[in-house]
Image 1: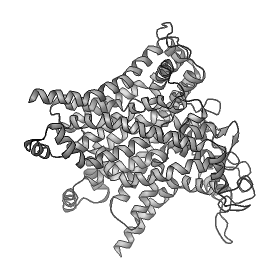
Image 2 (image 1 turned 180 degrees about the vertical axis):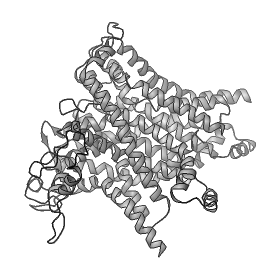
Image 3 (image 1 turned 135 degrees about the horizontal axis):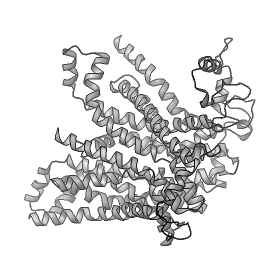
Image 4 (image 1 turned 90 degrees about the vertical axis):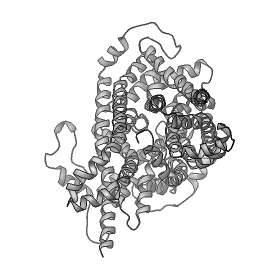
Length: 322
Length: 278
């Protein structure tokens, strides 16, 4: 009986495991092999060159910029996502009139294919017909009162709150910002679009975490006199932490390894200033046909993935123990 | 009164975010309904229609003069094939992992889950070589073979969570009644887990529709594209943008997917949080 069950388990799991090993494990090993050779798009087999691809990639200023961008992109967009999704989940946790409608609107970015959503932003940030720019420089109030939003923006940013190296200037209504044509703004646009995309997912996960907190805990906190921030810090946050961590780890992987947004929105431009490791690997490996080089560039992502995997494993074990 | 105040506060907090998050779709719709004369006139107010708008011209152009319809069909073909492969591999694996007690099951489960973390951006270069080496370059079959590499780990994980919620006693009862283990599976377990399987179908399909990196790497002929790859590559030629048609193209697949997501959201959450982390 036990023998039969073991056999059955192997038959049921085997195909999936073999499939994954062939299509994920195999290519991963092949990527490592390719990164150590001078293979080009023409053939799979190149001469062994040791770590030359890695050192050459590292010496390229575009690579350094791409590495910096990837880190910045991941950290900033995850910070935005955590803050916004946390806020939204808390506001949406208790029922109120029209909640389903707001939830539907919030979920939209997650449901749409990201390549198509990003094309929407390509138009929203268009150099001539950007609706953002139009709204900034036109009077948006009906009637005789005049209010042009760019004046408010400039009033806030006219003070030297932003460091010079960001190269952000006050908005000129005659020559409004080129969102995708200036490197700082283009990076901000990429971060914005990606956050836009991930926030619904994170909100949903946080909502699930909140709803899994039993009502008794809430009541107990009330009896003990914990309210507002205090309750959030000592009761809600610790209970939310496991699920929030899983969501964050997922978010880090999806962000650091995403190529769609940057590829469609800026394609690394202007002047290769907004490349990520992924888009730079694509340009090198596919467009320039330097397969080995491209593989080496994308493998610089591996430490992040290994780190996340290790954290997930530890985390899973800890939850299991408690 | 307190109820009204709560409503207002919630709307004040969530409302602005909801507007920002949903605005691109509103903007796609407005743009898709405009004539070129209206779109590219600096004088016209972008929030209002003028110069012959609204019009359905962009939608007609999309289906008449581009291969958009073909891309929708390709995406559907690939989606259906990938979902079928995914179910064949992930349903048995998810079930067995849920029932395997002890360290081996746990480890295998987490191992399969971790492969979901290996992204296409790491694998597309070696896979592009393999694909052309075995003669699948530029064929839909290439995507059908490769896509299950991310739908299977994800689906196995979700299904494992669902199967764990089905009490073992149900199967045991069927076994005692004389059914074989597989018979018990087919007659008792699968009917109950149908909602879970449906969730996997929806989410695998949407992962396929979403995929971009493999789709632009493996496929180069326009008529073999999927929508996620076809719209950004074929409808944008050099500096010529068909903005009205592009926005229509972006909007059409988004609406049904959004409705499906909303229907299955709660099940998805249950699956996501109910895996081995519980």
